Length: 243
Image: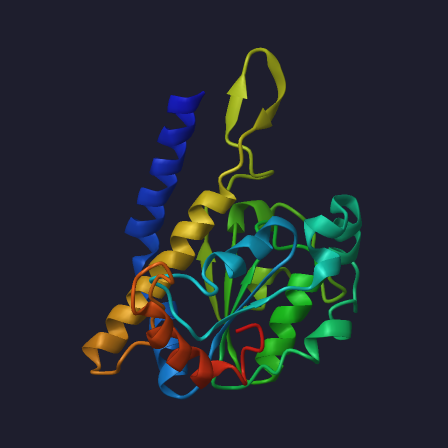
């Protein structure tokens, strides 16, 4: 199972890189444009998908202007079953999106592997209404096999400006075993983390090519890093209060 899992993940990563490189680059260009225009990158996801926002926030070697949208009621630590209930609820997003301060200069990445639940769809629609570019991280195969739970009848990939397909199978479980009666082993977190980090890396590279000094964190465990990071934190603290 270990060998098979690694093989499956590698296949998916190769396919994403080979078939969607142009989309990854497109999102990175939008991110670079955003940063050049004093915008920030905001990331939203419910359940396990909120991991991607935390993955690239306040990260050594990563961009400073990154803001995870962390709504606790749809995160697992407040109760896993409870979080799923909230994620499915129409109009729930209205209770927190108005506090997000999303602007037309921002890039908003919304992650949901099934892409069918109301809150991610509502968040994407809200961000678009406020002029932001919205990129979706989802599974088109999984999502298109299920009816939307949003009142519009649309799924996440149907409302985003750009869609990156994480290629997760229906149910997000890629392995089987004769002694196990259900499929198992998800891939969406592994592929999603690679997708998000590749976009961040490409964004930094694009800024460098444009002659723009990329706002990149240094590891706080390196001598001299605190001064470097403090200047960048000061620059963005009004838009990213968590800094």
